[in-house]
Structure formats: C-alpha cells, structure tokens
Length: 416
Ligand SMILES: Cc1ncc(COP(=O)(O)O)c(C=O)c1O
Image (cartoon, rainbow, N blue to C red; front, side, top):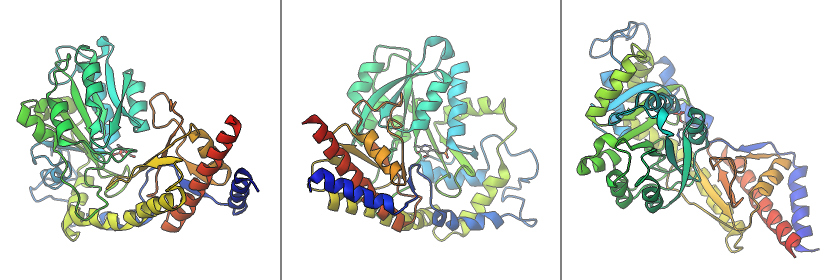
C-alpha cells in the first residue's frame, strides 16, 4: 500500500469512531469553573456591606470599582491599586467602550477625535479574531505585523507608525499571545513605549488576557509595560486590559483596565458620563471568594494550571511523537495562555481543518487568526486544548496529526 493509501486508511478508521470533539475555542473546562463555584454563595443577606461601608445594593461607589476589588485585581495587571478600573463582565466590552470613545472623543493626548482621521490600528498576526472583528466593525483600518518569541515586530511597527499620524496605536496581547503563546521581551517593551510615533496620541492597547495564566509553577518574569513606559516618561501611551473570564467565570465576572493616574482621570470622566458605576455585587463576591481561596489569586491560578498543564503536555507529546521528525509542521510550546499555534510546512491548513471536521473534530477555521480571514500562506492552525477533557485532547491530537500527514501527502501527490 502506498503511503497516501495507508494514511487514507488510517483516516477512515478515525471516521468510523464517530468522534465528536472540539478544539475550536479557548474556553475553560468545567473543572476550571468548578474551582470558582463558591463565588455563587460568597455574598448573602448578611454581608452586602463592604469593608469600606459601601452598600452594594445602592448607587454610590464610583466608576472606578470597589476599593477592595481594585486592591485584589491590581496584582493581575501588575499595576498599583490606584492605577486600575474594574468594570463589568468582560474585557472585550471594556475595550469596545474605550476604542469607541477614542473614535468619538480621542484619547488623553488627542487634539481631535480619531473618527475623522482615517484611523488605523496595528495588530499582530497570527492573532485574536475578536480584536480584528471589533476594530474593523468600528471602522479602523487594520495593519498587520508579525509576532515572534520577543513579541511584535518592532521594525515593522516603526515603519508603519513613524511617519503616518493616522496610525493611532497597536492592539495586541503582550503575554502568552493568542494564538502563539509569545510574550513581549523587555527590549521590545522598551522600544514599543518609547519609539517616536507620528501620532502624538499613539496608544498601546495591550490586551493582557493571559497575564496570570502560567502553566509552570515558576513562571518567567515578564516585562511590565506600564512600569517600562514610566521609565521612559510615556506612561499615558499604555492601556492594559484583562478580565476574570479565565480566572473565575467566562464573561461572568469582571473587566480590568490598568493605566497611568492621568489616564485614570481621563477615562473615569469618560465612564462617568455613561454609567453611575459598575456591578458592585459582582466585585464584592469576587473579593470575598478570593479572600477565602488558599493563597488567593495566585493559588487559584496555580490550581487552574494543574488542570490545564497535562492537556498542553499531551498536545506537545503527540505532536512530537507523530510529527517530530517529519518536517511537516512547526508549533509553539507556550509556558502559559490558552493556545498552541501550529504552522504546516505546506499550504494545507484549510484541508487539515476540513478533514478534521469530516472525522468529527472542530478546529478553529483557517484564516480566523488573520484580520481579513485569509491566511496568506494557508498554514496556521490554532489548537485550543483547554476545554475538552484530557482523554479527548489525546484523541483530538491523534486525529490532527493524522490529518496533517494525509493532507501533506495529498498535496505532494497533486504536485508530482
Ligand atoms: C486575547 C484575548 N482577549 C480577550 C478574550 C476574551 O476576554 P473577555 O471574556 O474578558 O472578553 C480572549 C478570549 O479568548 C482572548 O484570547
């Protein structure tokens, strides 16, 4: 039997198993959510008053969020307790508000709203589809730059932004990026906060969604973008975002935004015109829950890692065992975050995704990691192993490697 025929046969065996697997979206597993179940009973009739005597039933409390919540969650974005705003439910919601306001009213250093200036945002590719969708829906033109183990491609960023004042900022993930797992290095962080952009109001929208999502017990020390910017006197350029979506409940917790004190003034005035304040009940129960959790936020993230790490280890093991010496693909081996990014050597990503679907495995659609939905090399596949149980990750990965081998063999056969 030829290699191609043998691979087809192997693939048919997968199909016969009637699998129904999903590694499409980066969602926590139920076991991760279970860690936070006590949140649901953390607040009751006896404790609706905060330490600082804010009654969570009534309006007063302010737009910045509860003092106690700011004290707990400032550690997630590694900012001071006065440098954080705690908002509702999800970081995308917060980012959408801030980007919309920037369009209509500008940011702290703007002398005019962005909307009349044909605004452009730089994004990193491969990247997070919802960043692209949001920026595009708001009318930003998107400019793509690459990302590697040092973070975004600074040469490309400087080339785009140094002479064009309509390039208003960069929207990216600084730590354990979606999907590559890459984190910004200190050298790149220094350059990013200090390079001379043509736009005086160039802004770094740093979506630090995975800032505390380490897989390792001894995570590396990552650069602190706000501190780095302070060292260069450019702290107003940096806006950090995060949420508790992958800490407690997805889309059911708190949004976080970290920034300089001047930005706190600017953005709290902007928020003040839109809301009397965020959901204090949610904030208070997060605080009470984490107070009781052994070792607080750090302990909770360590427990998340215990559930997630075996799944990421499984992905690496199967990829190494099945594809290690075949020169068919390269892949990232992240120390944190929610994804593994795989690049096939041949332009076959769409075929791999469609074969996998045929055999019962949903993968992120090809092109989703690129702004226009088109992967120019048709090679990038985002693997999201967090949600399925470990046994299913194992099954799914065996199918993924089979599809990569089969699609590669089909491609080579069609070329010859
Ligand atoms: C980089 C990044 N930012 C934001 C989100 C969504 O966060 P939230 O639920 O806070 O909107 C995700 C989810 O996958 C993500 O990968």
